[in-house]
Image 1: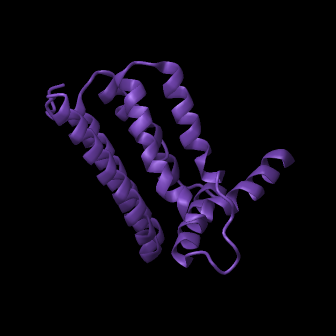
Image 2: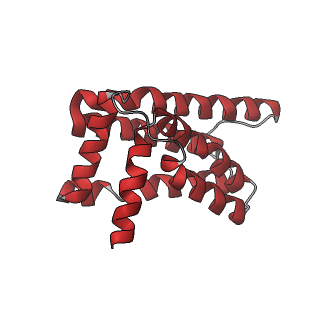
Image 3: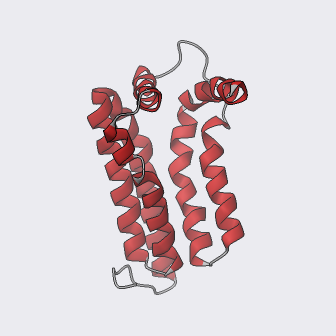
Length: 169
């Protein structure tokens, strides 16, 4: 148990680095690609990379951290330290979103993939604001930008390949 606590005390400050917040939504691109091409090994690598990306970057210097990011992470830490029924009810939404994303692209539905991406990231923003107040606004730019990049890349690829962005698959 000390090993996990030591790891978390090392990794958690790195999650304060804004780069980790901006890069995480971009992992949906390789996840979508590996689902579309039905390559489970690449998909597994992309998921592990996304899950580990919160500690890739160095911890920001003391005093150089956005207080809103600190507020959001403190709220998340409290939710995990003393979980309520709301935590247990909403926590499964994360793997459900990832599963929905994978299913949409595995079965080659660009439209549903975009619905899952944009809906999931929108819900994450709303959930964070609802649980951390004004501090939650710190998630709008990184998650919104991630959603915009994903939507733009998928739209460009679809257009170049003559594919439709419909919800029919």
